[in-house]
Length: 450
Image 1 (tube, rainbow, N blue to C red):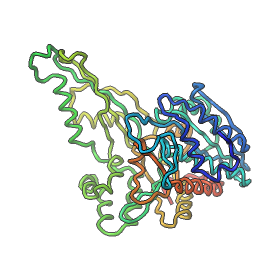
Image 2: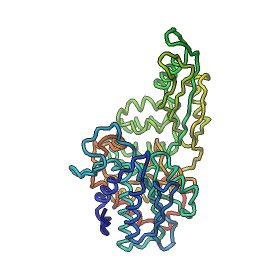
Image 3: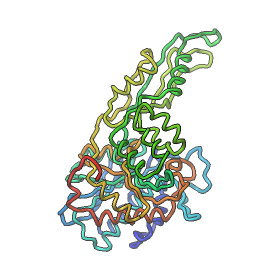
Image 4: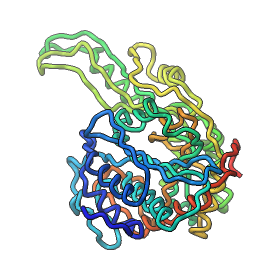
């Protein structure tokens, strides 16, 4: 693939080049894509390092030196993507076609589009000789979609020195436009829920499939799944969600604002969610811990009643809660009989550092006068959780001015993933403004947004 020195001027074209590398994870095979990015950055004058747990799955850490008057700023993003298997696409998922103003392809939103924005902004800073107060560090990562063991987690555990002195980073899942009540909001992710994956084992009498039985493991499975389907874990309003809801409500008039404020009272949260309807979908997973049964294993022969069934469950914890909280809340619903075992749990929890929130908000307002930036708690997880172990606060800040009616959250990981080419340019420009404004003042910490 040809290396064009002025490609930073055309971030949508850069995105097309990235999408054409099939980096479906598993297996990942990010090496060719990472090599392309390294060649681009090395040619532009960046210092680059390739670091890998597996040669086919390298990570790139590149640095552009600043004056040293401010801490380095980290721009981190992944190039692996989820599968397109069993999906029907209108256009080839790795064709990266530009159609009707949209770049189509797997990773357009999650998150090669964001990587293209970051690369374009950083290469522009180099090309234009931007006087940077602090270093810019670019981490282009493998394996985020499978947890980061070959990517961010590997770097944090084995090459933490490369991130020394960094206090702030930008990454995925925030900065995109969201329409509520006729206003345009830009959620900036400042915190994320934690993984708490569990296994439930249900036991009962086994036997021959020809003999009627009741009260067995299958019946217990049905009751447990029905209980989880019809009930929710308790409401808990975290500080970030409170700030988010209050900021949105303050920008909206009348009944919608009242319904939003009702979300903040656990006694009225669920009725407020019902009243908000589709507009409240963003709040459903961030006002409580959640758990969903995702894998069921039991039985080996059609003529044998299984004596044991194992259910794996994807649990997500609010900041401040622990695996013990999840277990206690589940027990209150499903009772004491199912054996519960923790599969994976990320106990690390840090209070959001809001010191750069004001800067990011100002950039969005300058770039889009209609913007109403708000802090946001992500219901999923990102590589930001790994960098948090080094004391780095990641903000979800990949600015996208999306048209009303285009639902980015329902398009991510789905068929026909795409992004407006203009949104990629919008994001590259906004991130460039961040590189221009990043300075000594950003080293201060503040517990709440300005």
